[in-house]
Length: 241
Image 1 (cartoon, one colour):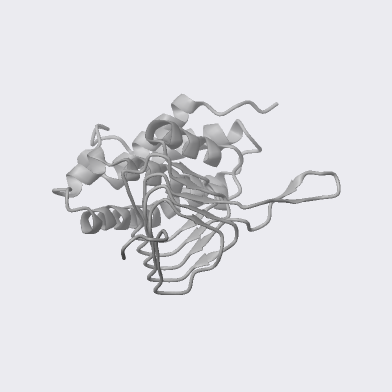
Image 2 (cartoon, rainbow, N blue to C red):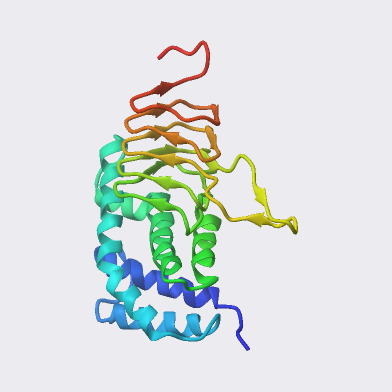
């Protein structure tokens, strides 16, 4: 009989992943064999949820260099977009983006591998500590930045391109759901697509399977349920552009 994975062990695994990716900013001792320790914990937690397949954990370990590359692009995006930040260390140690994207990018890879429960647990751990809710099934490109971040929600079928930035309180959500003959919701694409170089300002809700064209700027406090062509600037009526 399978049991629930251990949050404590998953937290330890994420500490080790952070050490592997950002060794200069981690309290894990330098003698720790990070990859093997990650493999051991992940194997034990996968075995708690489903039949253990070591090939899946091996594939996850092999994906760590790409996860690290993506996370470093996210750090660079913060440096590029926030004049208040002084250096890389400040971003890694202080910005909630790093915590939430570390958990999301690990969880997304585990989700792609078909590992149950653990991906959602990892993103909910980050949600609890940062106030940022990203579903592990969402697709997010490189150089992704969130400023402040509290209250950001990114739904499961959202697709976000490269060099996108969100501010606090942004929701990429569903407008409505489709149901089967038994009244159960169907998991269809229902969340927005943000193409490359899109910025969405605070407390804006973009709902439904709509596309925000590349190089667009969406102002704050907007309710948006339709497609937006590339290069658009959307603001509230009566607001100066």
